[in-house]
Amino acid sequence: MVTQLISQRDLQLARNLVESSGLAFEENFDVLVGIFEAGALVAVAARQENILKMFAIAPSHRGGP
Image 1 (cartoon, rainbow, N blue to C red):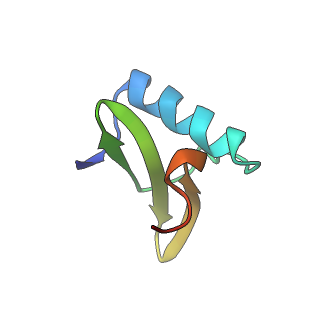
Image 2 (cartoon, rainbow, N blue to C red; image 1 turned 90 degrees about the vertical axis):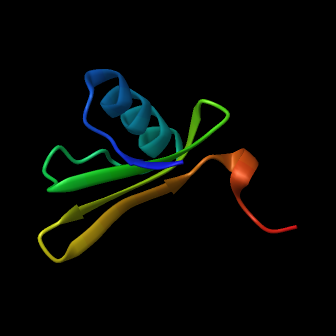
């Protein structure tokens, strides 16, 4: 399920995923969205004005079939 991440819990999950992917979590964004699968956050991305940033995907969901 794709959803906007706004709660403190969701923000912490997003921070953990972004930082575990070797990226910096940036506090400045207009929209932060995530994809949940079986209750776990597996992907996240943000937009700040016309800039897309903080794309992170859980290792278990990288690659293809």
